[in-house]
Length: 115
Image (cartoon, rainbow, N blue to C red; front, side, top):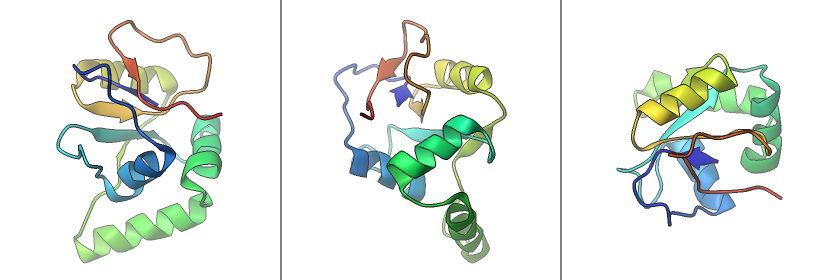
């Protein structure tokens, strides 16, 4: 997980990352705005399996219910890893997942790393 934050000491737990992406909130919800890749992207599938721990169909169903009830909107979706990194880099507070080993711009901060 990488973020565009001014405080490079921010670190999130797996539970906080899951909450951020499924509820659009954390204890620092005013600071962080999740960004996701589109369904079908390999990095999204891995993130959903390892961190969210739900299949894509359940995630889509959850967000459909949230939209229908007017409670929340799903995280903004990007078509590619490059688009995601660009968006995060241009928007303070944006946070998204990238595969391990991805070369990151120097102004982005790693806030969570999966084992």
